[in-house]
Each structure stands twice: as C-alpha cells, then as structure tokens.
Length: 357
Image (cartoon, rainbow, N blue to C red; front, side, top):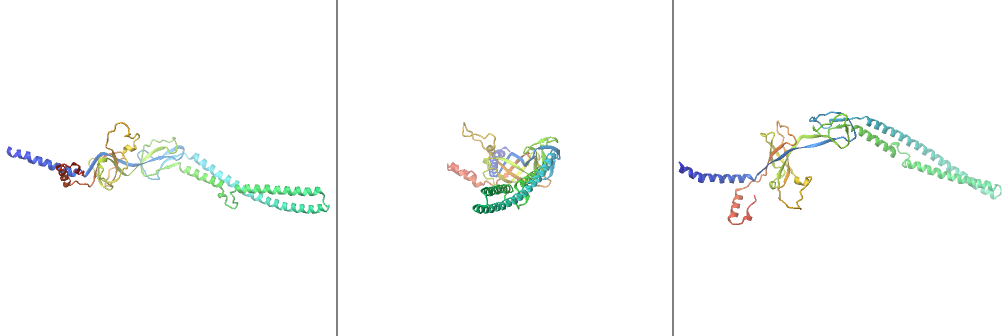
C-alpha cells in the first residue's frame, strides 16, 4: 500500500499545488477587495438666518422629516414690530414725497409769476427811461424802476434754484408714480426685508432626512449661520471604499461591485463604481506630509472610490459611518499566455520582458 501512496505524495500533490497556484494567479487579479470602506450619506446643516430666541422645537432627535416641514419656530414678536415700523416708514415717506410734489408745483407757479413780474418791471423801466429823457419823470423814479427790475430778476433766480432743487429731490420726473421715487422704493425694500425676516422665524427642513445631534431647547438664543443640528439624507446612501493606489490600475466607472456590511454579515449588496477621487486622503489632511524635507519613506496611498448601491427588496436600513467590505470586479482576467510569457522571459534571461499583467 505504501508503494502507491509514495508516488501520489511525490507527484499528484505537487501537481495539485501547482494547478491551484496557477488558478489562484489567474483569478487573483480580477477582483480587488478592501475592508477600509464606510457607508456615507449627504448631511445638511440646519441653521438660522436671523438672530432670535427659540420659541418652539417641533422635531425630536432621530426623527424623520420631509422637505419643507417645520423644524423650529423662533419668537416673532420683535420681527412683527420691525415690520410695522417699516410699513409706517413707507407711509411717512410717501406723504413727504407727495408734499414735495405739491411744493414743487407751487414753486413753479411762483416762478411763472416772478417771470411775468420781471417782464412788467422791465417794460416800466423802458417807459420811465423815455419819460426821464423828456424830463417828465425824475431821476429818483427812474432809479426805483431799475431797482424793481433787479429785485424781480433776483426773485426769478431764487425761484429757479428752488424749483431745480425740488426737481432733483423728485428724481427729475414729477409725473412718475410716488412708489417709483428712490426713497419710497428704499422703504418698500425695507418692508420686504422685514417680511422676509418674519418668515425666517419659521425654520423648515431644506431636505428630506433624519434629524441628528438635536440638543436645541426653547428659550435658547440662536445666531445666523451657526449650525443648530443636522439632517442626514438617508434616501440614497453610498459606500466610500479606500483602495490602495496600486489596486486601481484597471478600475473604471460603472464597474460592478459587491458590498457586505459588518452589521449584516450574511447580506450582499450589488453596487456600481460611481467615481474615483482625484486626490488621496493625505492631500486633504490638516497637516499634509512634507516629503521634500528629511528622510523619506515610500508609503502606498489610498484613493476613495464612491460606490452606489442598487436598491433591493426588503432592504435593511443603512446608517452613515457603518463599516463594510467591498469587492470590485475589474473585468481584467489574467490569461495562461501571460504566465507562459513570464516563464519564457525568465528562460531567455530577459526579466525586463516579464508581463505585468
């Protein structure tokens, strides 16, 4: 019996090992796998656009909300007062512009009267000059006529200046609607701003998602652009897999992937490569590596690969931050001819011809 076992051990087992190694080599280059993968989701930061005090918090932590749903209500009394004041300013400005138009019309009438008056005084002066030449009118009377003409001209100059100043205040157009006056438009804009701020006292959801990190309480004071809490958009999460740069040689968009989450070890998701990051994670680090100084050690970098998951019936919930194992089918099969080429290159003592497939 031993004489049959010995040949088997010496021939068959090594042959099986060689065949297994060849099969492993042939199939080993097609799939790339990493456990450095995490579930990701869009996160919208909810903040107030105005300064105010919280009156009511409508949502609770980890509750689902729809886009446009009310989240937080601020005390609107200060903004109601500001709106009423802005509307009163509009009425005051309209009345002032209307009064200015009436004053301009009155000043224009006075200017016309002054111009008519100067014509009369000029005619009187010419008449008195002729009479003075015939010694019918005294020189003092002539001087009085000349003085009257000067006063009439000064009056016309004053009225022209007044009319021009009023016309400038009216924007050069006295026939335009009062609401088209620049000052009235400014006050109307202030009303619209006050109305906008009043609407902003009601904070609504910018997206559909789940509220997280909600610690806001009624009575707290909020300021613009300071995050109050966040909304996680869980409608379509994706997986971010961090592959070594040496593994991504043949990876392209739309390639198929398989994803297994650590929380659901027996469930496999089908996915598709959506994109490959144009930069490694080190490029976005707070303290990027300084490779131009000191001793340098080469470290293989990793590139984030975005993988969209295909929907599946009875899909279990995915949470942002979950860990996963990802395998991507590069569709790059090694062929037996590649292996023969490697052996041929070594046999001919030309290692530079060894295929890198």
